[in-house]
Length: 286
Image (tube, rainbow, N blue to C red):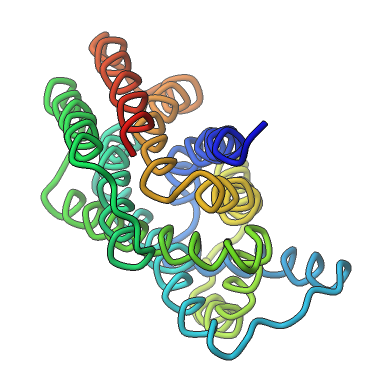
């Protein structure tokens, strides 16, 4: 199996894990504030990352990599989790998930700026069509939305794309799981301080759904998913493998329907079919 195939397989597994992030976040903000949730998930994941780094005796990052790690952390450790948690106070999980369809374009854009990749024009055509199919699906299915929530999701997508591209470049020389672990460790002092000043006012009122949501985003969304995702981006190409994110909204919508009992329109099937074809086309011409 060549590196490209391994990259696509690893990236698909990462996307499958990430697809549960927004439904889990939606459940978690029922009991935790967005600020505390963002800090708590980062602190828990950083603790696990420290254990892994120490147990496997990983060397510290080079001084020249610290700036890239900080950019990455700003995007995927702080920016995306916080902005999506804030957005989910205004919109439903099903509504917010469709914005993830813009992530491939955001990731590909930053892959050009930060990763030095140069996809062919046909790649951009399939990428735009895929994004439009997701956007069209969002318009047809409606959902509880608001301007504030939508703007927060757009900002989250931009920061996440930057964090994905920056982390993927680092993964080529540091390794996927090492990159996310060091980014979490770098963020630990700040996130721990934020968590200490923003705890819930009444812990007894936090339901089991919120605790399960926190557990998922801390272990899987914040750590395990990135191990596979950054490996996939590094092996298969940032812009190319990034197109797999077009599938994430539909995986997430299924989870939102099953776990949160949110309605999912029949148009999801048609939009998913178009999206799969766009992913295949982007893979062919990247």
